[in-house]
Length: 69
Image (cartoon, rainbow, N blue to C red; front, side):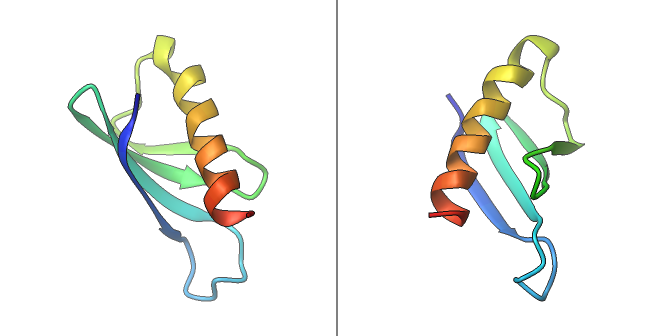
């Protein structure tokens, strides 16, 4: 389970889609960019291949809840 999930707009003009996000998973900090299409671009500490699918699903759900509510 990921913890301490945070996100902020990628651009000053918040109407332009794209968000930076970060979280902790297994005591490791991860960050990336969430694009409007739902694509995730990892910018620091790419997760293990076995964890990417699960984490991507969790991030997508969190972004839908927070950004597209």
